[in-house]
Length: 293
Ligand SMILES: [Zn+2]
Image 1 (cartoon, rainbow, N blue to C red):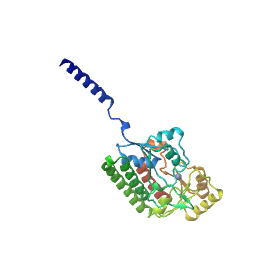
Image 2: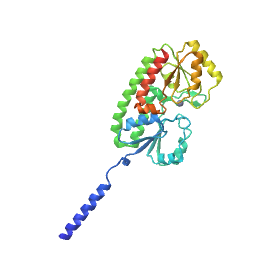
Image 3: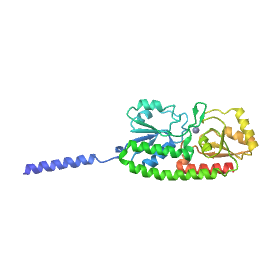
Image 4: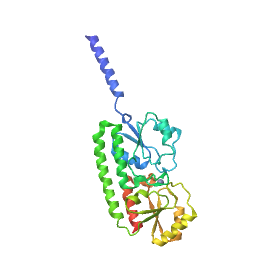
């Protein structure tokens, strides 16, 4: 009996030790990577505390022209899934990551958006339009349910809350932008193409779809003429776009500069004041209203 008791005590000790090391940790949640800030923020809002969501393109870096290092590729390959926009935004690197991560699932969340094209090139900025953001969050929610079906109801609830916030934005954009005196948005690169299409504005970018492009002197003088002709009061400088050429246009046309966010990344200042996708979308609407009144 004594021997049996000793064995029982030893066994209980082993069991309790084992349970100490087997406590649930952060790493037990599925890891999901989102390609860049707007996708990251929207994914995080739907995932809540059920998934570990990480951002691929670092904060304060333009999503145009970014590429992952070998180390970053190895990290991404550990994820259960990668959620990315598509529409050519991640084209310089997404296929390399797919090859390096054969066990990771990839979800393209711009599916169902009617693309705006110039020739064969697709404009990759749909998230700035609330109407298109609604399609993106539906795709993100479906992806998360696919990744972790056991939390379907939880994701569904977070999605419904986010959806009503963005539906509100859509309503405000529609009502407010229909009332502006001016309709032409002059800016550096064509980030507001979907906003223009969806809410009845016209966009006049200095360069094309990538903020990396070089402006031409001919286009600068064309825009100066347009600003004078239409009586435009503000030119927009978006996100990480260079201010210099827009300052030249402003100076030559008599217009003022208005800073606006592409929400393509978060600046240090955005982070310090706890800005997020929704708050930046609201600020953009206020800036568009002021710039076009
Ligand atoms: Zn851009």
